[in-house]
Image 1 (cartoon, one colour):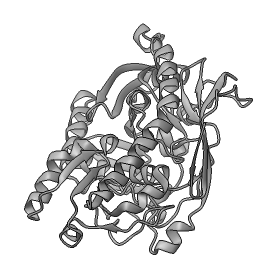
Image 2 (cartoon, helix red, strand yellow):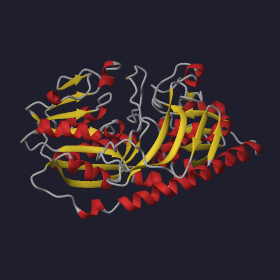
Image 3 (cartoon, one colour):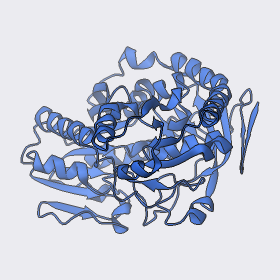
Image 4 (cartoon, helix red, strand yellow):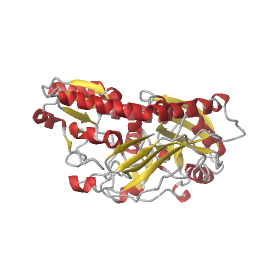
Length: 406
């Protein structure tokens, strides 16, 4: 099957085994179940004009499932260069800040990190590392090439390193390595984890990870959570197997943030073995991948019809959340996306920019007074209460709908 849309072609065939090896385990057992062409390479780039957004660099998606280890990956992934105008922070949300603070406190207490040095790989603009130090950490080291484009604010107890991670960054005084929402962006996560493990050596330094949870994405056919910037999509099982193969013992694996994320805590292996529970999800993941493939076109078609019906009733539509989800969603629905008046984001860095590939304007919440929408589609329904409070404060009465139910 295929779906036609301006500038793209998406094919959902029966799949086939890829010649290339799995980026997680190295096995040549990767079966492609979704192909999509001409999608934006960088969903979170801040384009200053609509023309620039429409002319964004594009690539392809070929999602494959590894029957050996259960990892889902984009076998067509090509790492993009670091750009100055990149913004993916969720820290403007009080709900997200509270979540991040709670996670930082848990890790500080559970691993005895108060007064110690913490290294964060892929720290972005440093919000989480800032929280860890504020919650009792002694010192922080934040490593991320994006810092060269927009350095975090100066901090007398945090050293910012605008580089890609190397073993030398894991200094002798480091007592924990944090890596949040970075592993899924790496073309070779096994090599990265191997480097971290080798750098730890004989020390008892925990590795604290957070990644998106792939199973609900596949089960719910949440196509808006699939985009080029993610090279890998982890389940609890595939993440645990990768950590084990890299020389770590998984001590804790939890679902978090409304089952959107996986939080893993691992330590250097001392003869530990992979738990049976983590081995059980390969068949489940493959069934979910097949379900995703079968539902993909059907769901997009239904959403297009929903937008067109709303427009026929004279309703005005706005989106809330101008991140990768909105980009993937608007690209997928194609021409029906023209019915969306604007995309709201509370992150002031995003406001005034345009969505990659579609050119939709990103505005602040107050702009909705001018648009006067009837429907607001939430890219992430976990923020429903926060969105409702903001809309109420603006004196707006609108219908809030989830992305999949628009």
